[in-house]
Figure (tube, rainbow, N blue to C red):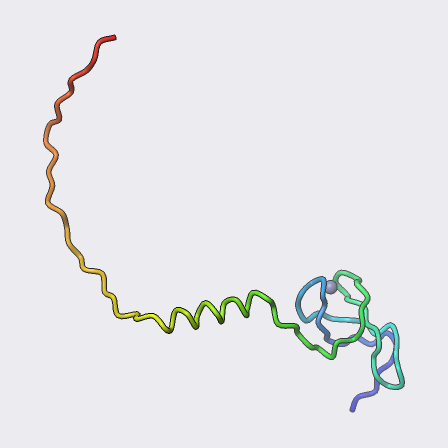
Length: 96
Ligand SMILES: [Zn+2]
């Protein structure tokens, strides 16, 4: 187990940047980081042990995929080219 010191740079999840960023330790409890500050946006937060929260949209996606997988995906679109020629169109204008 590495020993932490105030000011050490560690990786942690930043709630502002929404990703793992470099953080400086600003508070220690025993030998564990308690609070860290993002080096990019300077947001201070509790040390999250690099835990990345699951985005809410992910769950929605899973549900959507579940619905899709239940449906029959065997539907091939048939190609057909319509033979339609439009040759010369009557232009009957109206006089106003
Ligand atoms: Zn940040």
